[in-house]
Length: 313
Image 1: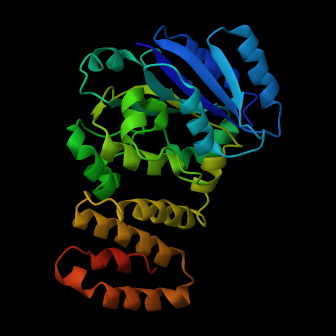
Image 2: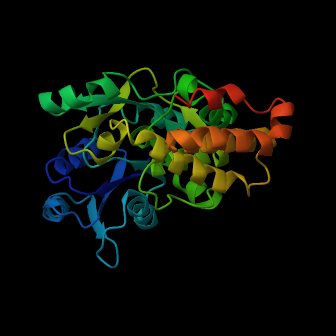
């Protein structure tokens, strides 16, 4: 196997060396691609030192040397990659020794286009644990049981809570399948660009479970995590979910092969989080509007009204 590990780097001077070295421990890793995204700290210098130190490390920036976000940085990494497989790693996370154990066997089958594994949690300080333990606890980010690849997309869309979710850090993709079959790579979203990408990826590619009952990589939680701060802020999740489901609906509405009931479900999720994010006085007006607009969907049994009412409080 020749795996290209893509690491977008922003404000991670303290952590990026550990991330890189955790990837280089694996013989399957053909190259580690760092995409430095105009960090305000000394991340660029740290990346330059890593490129000098290790032959397998390659450093890139965006052509204009400006900040573009994690999604476009991963896209640049994919573009620059030369391995047969692509894996991802955040600059403040790290791989474990078993990271590619399942991949080495599963990818012998040419029908396997992607493999996903479980992500654990590492608190870098007691302060970080105190702040964010209620959000992550010591739980695995994983799909809870093994599923056929055709069940992954509807499972993520319809039953995200009970189905589970895998992380980019635990995902390995056949590069040829990614380039040929996924119409658009990462979108330039400020939040949830990874989840939106995983939705689309699981529709276009056959993704298989690898090691899902123990961690293959670790999420590094510290006080300055951008996403952690958003997810732990009670005022923000509804806003961020509106962004996620808006982008997901923008995709599915034009995808002719996606069943209508899934499109309706995604539209419901989009509107539900819009309602949750609306001022209290607007909530009932929005609910009444959507009840009228979606009467036929409700009548047909494809729409769950109770979900809406649960968002009023």
